[in-house]
Each structure stands twice: as C-alpha cells, then as structure tokens.
Length: 94
Image (cartoon, rainbow, N blue to C red; front, side, top):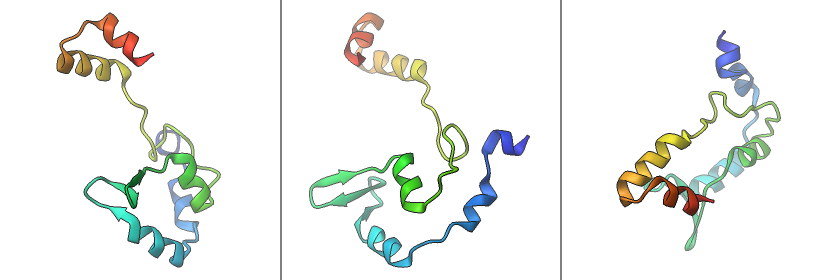
C-alpha cells in the first residue's frame, strides 16, 4: 500500500550527491521565491530536471515527489479573483 501510494522512497537513500554541484546550486538558491536565481533570471527546475541532476531514472510522477494540480479548484479561484465567467476563464487558459 505504501509503495503504491508514495513510490520507492528508500531508493532515494542510495542516490550519490555531488558535493560540488550541491554547493554551486546552493549559491544560486533564492529562499524567498523557492527558485534558483541567475542574475535577473529565475529558474524553477521541473521533476525531469531533478531526475537528471540526481541520476534517479525511477522517480515517477504523481507519487510523493510531485503533486498533480487540481484544475477545477484553480479555475474556481481564478473566476473568483477576476470576477469573470467560466467561459472567459476557459478561453484565457487555452
């Protein structure tokens, strides 16, 4: 049950971390925005980039490592913030 819900978490304990790479990434981490900042460019790595950097080909989407967004909740929030109709919001997202 745990494996099905969260994936192979103990596998992450076997990942070898390149200390120099980790130090270099830490220099550019912006904790205020939870992203990497290179000059005036903000860079937010996606799951695929992390799997490449960490050499973890077995990381799966929709497991403990990532969360699928709830589109309906997002649409409702966007409609309440903008005061626009559902049709207008749907047209803007497409």
